Length: 185
Ligand code: 218
Image (cartoon, rainbow, N blue to C red; front, top):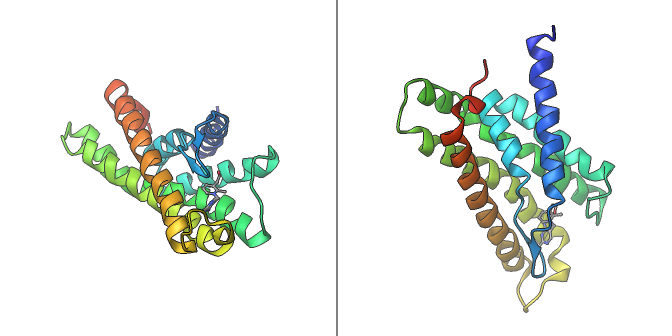
């Protein structure tokens, strides 16, 4: 039998691999907008297993980008911020794991609310990294005569909002269909 600890880490690696596979679905448009549906498995996993495990799963997802040649690298520090830090930070969703799980056990109406807050926190944490990298490293490619800050805000703000909405809709549907997915045994 696998120890319960190994099971947590293996589930995290599976969630990361699933996220990476979803990252290959082409949902990019315009000069840099994108909807990142890979967030779905890592966010569900973070609600299920908590922040520490979620941060680990996000880190694996980020590292997979290098392994599969899917990383846009300008400099070493940019790559570290956008692929190690940003993807790891998705795991902050797990700060709401206890609230969600208690809510499910008590049949509380608040579960959808905690799922929303957790999804927003993980998405915001990740896109704050992309926003900062956007200002520092991508500013020189700014379009439409915008300043680096405004350009990064438009690109990363739009991507964050669309990604957050898409993720929340699917997370909510998964919760309604199968609340057990969010409960660690
Ligand atoms: C303004 C701007 N343009 C591009 C990027 C790079 N970026 C943004 C969001 C997500 C990702 C990761 C995988 O696609 C990357 C590399 C930026 N930060 N800012």
